[in-house]
Every structure is written in C-alpha cells, then in structure tokens.
Image (cartoon, rainbow, N blue to C red; front, side, top):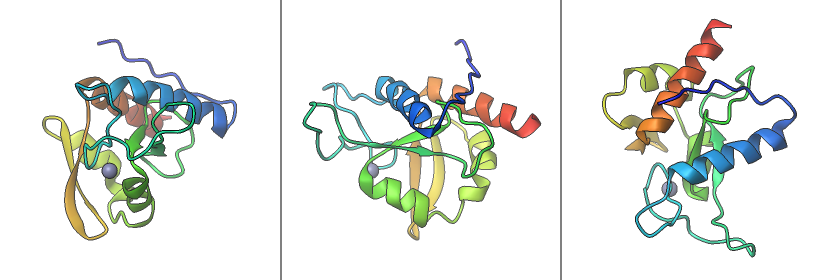
Length: 135
Ligand SMILES: [Zn+2]
C-alpha cells in the first residue's frame, strides 16, 4: 500500500474535511453504512444532506502537524469519551505502534474497549505518527 504522508496546513476546517473524506472511505460496513471505530455500530443519525454524522477526532492531542489520516471516525458518544475520558491519550502513539492485528486496546470512561482500524488506516496512522515524532 502506498503511504502518503501529506500534512494538511491551511486551517483546521480544511484538515477536518480531508480527514472526514478519508475516514468515510475506510469505515463502511457491508450495508454501506459508516461505522464507529470503537462500538463498530452504524453512526446514529444522518444529516439533512443524507451523509452520516460522525466526528473525526485527532488521535494525538496537540500534534504540530495535521494529517488527514491521523484521526478516528467516532460516533458522538465515543468522540466525547475519547476526548474527555481517555486516560491513554498521551500514550496513543506507543499503543498504536505496539498494536498487533487491527485493534488497539484502550480504556474509555473506565471501560476497557478496543479501537478497530482498517489495515490501510493503521499503516497510514503509523507513518503519520512516525513523521510527527521525527520532525
Ligand atoms: Zn461508537
């Protein structure tokens, strides 16, 4: 798989849009529904545009560069839990680099769970975190 380490500079909104497009391609179930990477259920509602509502949450807080791949596709509940009740957010780089298979074990809101990654996304995220770390 080709790894693109393209950082997205012009503004948070543009970066978020690129991340969302990327994630929408990665996390579809067999019915074509967009799923959350934690609960793996379809996103709970759609926007008036017909698109699923979801949140693209940056994996590592306060990254100096924004990569469209370095986000998670999360439902509103898990987006909030990841942002506000994630004891391991500072350790995400290590957890992701050490992950075996397609799941990263994590605790959200005191509950042990896993974050599911597509093979492509996991490869891309590792490349981004590595680039971030060595700049
Ligand atoms: Zn969820």
